[in-house]
Length: 169
Image 1 (tube, one colour):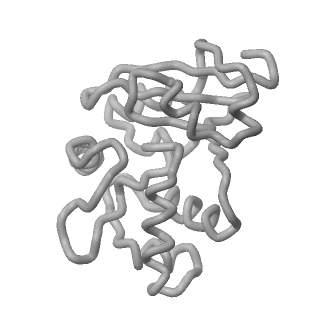
Image 2: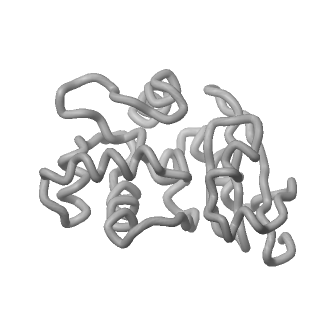
Image 3: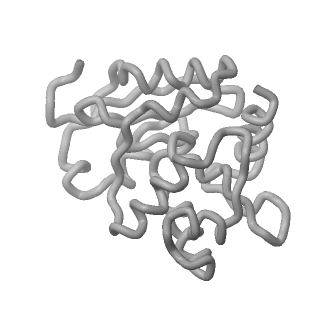
């Protein structure tokens, strides 16, 4: 376990490219499909960016990724996560974590799951766009009601792979 008050990073290989994981005191604070953890570090809150960034073992988050890639697609659900945001955004992130692997929802559906009106689909989309903890907070499971895959911070091919992986597990 790393010393308190630092951000620990680990990069894992996946079929769609490297996945950087960043933890603080055992809680996942950022994750994204990049080979450089600093790409995620710069998106953290100012208080977290003031902490040192060190390479190391992120523990259970890394094990959960390995299990996820091995077909246990609910393994990411057990990892504690924390990211900045308003109370509404946190409700949306909690609702996202409740969307089971192998299923998808629309932005309007996500808003409703968070206790917001369906017309808050734009707020749901904004929360997905600002999500720092992909794929643990699974914004890839949200699709536009008009069809297609919509956008994804790490590119549509990554989103397509994640959805296919989860539906075939």
